[in-house]
Image 1 (tube, rainbow, N blue to C red):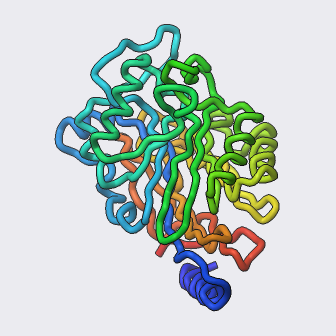
Image 2 (image 1 turned 135 degrees about the horizontal axis):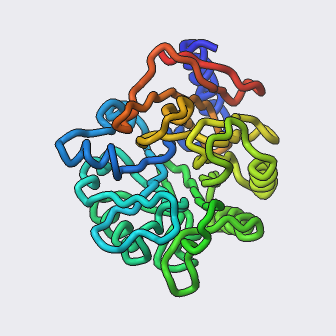
Image 3 (image 1 turned 135 degrees about the vertical axis):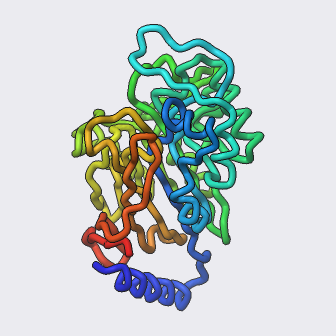
Length: 325
């Protein structure tokens, strides 16, 4: 499907929505995958560079931008023993993130790399920079609290969970950490968000096996369970490569967005990722598309005009492929 046809289809869907019962104006969300600001990206920022500059204009177009922060941002703590890779970014990265991301997810396997004090420093730093955080908090209850998004009369709840070791990063009743993916708790949180008045519920998952181009049976089982329990669409990350996209019960599942800002990978598939753009109203998705990013040796993502990636719209039950103009 061409970009022009998708735009005309979206305009038609908007007209139909406005002609029917009163509805909220559409809201544009943008999700990206893993953002790691240590190592190459951190050195680039230290020397005055900006790994987000190539996508600054596109990030600014969305009403709300969300990414997965794959490192603490802190000056405290020590790396965990026996962990193959531990990351920690300097606080100088916060101005680079500010104004680009509205919220960042903490539910991943690197948020706790430098301990609980560094984790809490990360939350405080994001808050000072005007960036919301979710999927983690000073205790279990706050780690499971949804990211609430209210725009143009639409109320969205975004939940986040990690299910990749170490589980020691999980929050407890009175200690900080991330939200861990237990099926019963995920289902309970989705239903609680509905009762609290969410028009749409979106889980943002950190799951799957690194380097695998297709989702595992576990990912599919959990994605389907979440939708059966009331989620409107599911977005995922962690494998460092993009994975499959499917509709289940008419709801979108994007299993992995891959990397966004990340260096140190030799595998070509890990040097690319998707930006996911969603246009939402009270009934769910009006339209969506994915945009390809190519990551250079410094970990900086670059747009790929002319490339093709999955896309779709409400009126079409099949997943299409759109070309970025």
